[in-house]
Image (cartoon, rainbow over all chains, first blue to last red; front, top):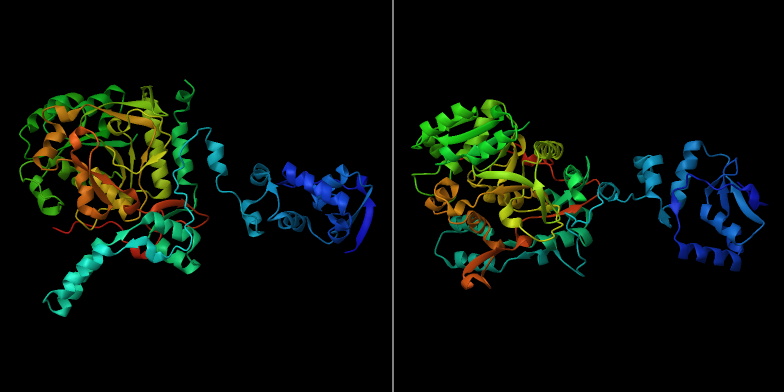
Length: 241
Length: 300
C-alpha cells in the first residue's frame, strides 16, 4: 500500500467511527498539524476504496480546520468489510473518547472487546438510573505497597496459639486445637479488596476469588446493581411527586 | 404470586400480616401461617384460618427440636418462631414451593419510600411487581436470600443507598440456593444474613422503595418479641457477635445513659462486592468444591 496525496475534499468522514475527541485535545491536534504538517506524511489517513476514513477521522477534521488543501492517505483496498470495521476499532484503541452509545448500538460488543477495546461497564447502570444513588460496589482504594499479610490481624490468634503450645497436651491434641484457634483470625475484607484490585498477581486473584474473599460481580447476566435499579424503577411514578 | 410464610406465636386473634395481605387481595392459598403443636391456642388459629381461608401449618415441635440445632439454646418451652423458620425449608419442599417470602406476624402494611421520604401506601401492584422482580433477580443470579427494608432502621434521612447489608424482616428465600450453615440451622434472619455474607455469598436488602411498616411489637403483649425475650435472645443481632466476634466493637453509647452497646464493623464481617469484567463468583455453584451446597442439619 502506497502513500499518495489527494485533495482534502475527496476524503469522506466515517459516520460510524465511534471515537470522540475532547475540545482541548482537538485544539492541540489542529495546532500540531499547522506547526508540524510532516506528521501527516509519517502517519497518513487511512481510507477505503470509497475514500471513507477508516483511520484518522479526527485528523481529517483537524486538517479541514487547519485549511489544508491536500493530505497524504493510504488506501486499504485489500481489507474486507469486516476487516475495515476491525481496523477502525484497533486503530483507535487507547486514544481519545468513545461514543459508547454508538458502540453499544452499532457494534458487536464481543468483537470490539476481542479487538482490544475495553467497554465501560457502567453504561447499563447509567441508562437505567436518573437517580442519584450510592453505588452498591466497593471502590477499592489504592494503598501503596500493600501486602496480603496486611489484610489479616493475627494478634489474638498468635496469643491463643502460644497458650496451646505452652500447655501440657500431647502434640496431636495441640495440632487439632490450633485449628480451632483460626476463628480468632481477623480478616480485613476491605484491605483484601484493595490488595486484589491493585497488587495481586493473576494467580493470587484466582485464589482470592475462589476463597470468596472478594465478591466479584462480573455481570454475566447483567449486573446486580442494574437489577436493583430495575426493581426501584417499578415505583417510578412516585419519584417526581 | 409468591407464597408468604408467617411464623406466629400467641397472636391467633390478631394476625396482622394475614389481615393485611388478604385486605390488598393476596391469594389466600398463598398465605401460610406456621405454629407448633405445643401452642396453647391452636384452636383459635384453626378457627381464624377456617374463617379467612389461609393455610395453617402445625408442625411437630419435638421433631423440630431433634432435627435442628440451635446456636443459643433457649428455654425448652417456647421456641416456635425460630423452629418454624427452620421447618420452612422442609414444608416448602413438601408443598413443591421453591420460592417464598418470610414475614413476621405483625406487619401493618407496606409503604413506598423514596430518598428517605415516605410517599404513601403501596398498592397491590407495587407489592406484587416488586416481589416478582426480586424473585426474577434471585433466580437469575442464584441468590438464596434477599430482603426488603423495614421502618425501624430506616426512618428519616435522605438515604441514597440501593443496597443494605443488614437484617430485614421481609426475607425472600430461594430454597435451591439457600445456605443452611455448618453451625446449625439458624433461628432468625440476622444470623442467617450475617452467616451467608460471611461465607462470601451475596445477600442484601433494598435500601429504598418498598418498605415494611410494622407495629411496635416490643411494647405489646404476645408476639415474637415475647418469644425472643423468653429465649434470652434479648437482641436478635446478638447472634452476630456470637458467631463473628472479630467484627464487633463494644462501646458506650453517647446518648441513652452511656449504656454499653456493640457496633458491627462491617469491614471485618464480609467480603466486599466489586464490579469486575467477566469474573463472577456470586452464584453458589461457581466452584465445584462448594457442591453439594445445602447442608442438612447435623442432628437427626
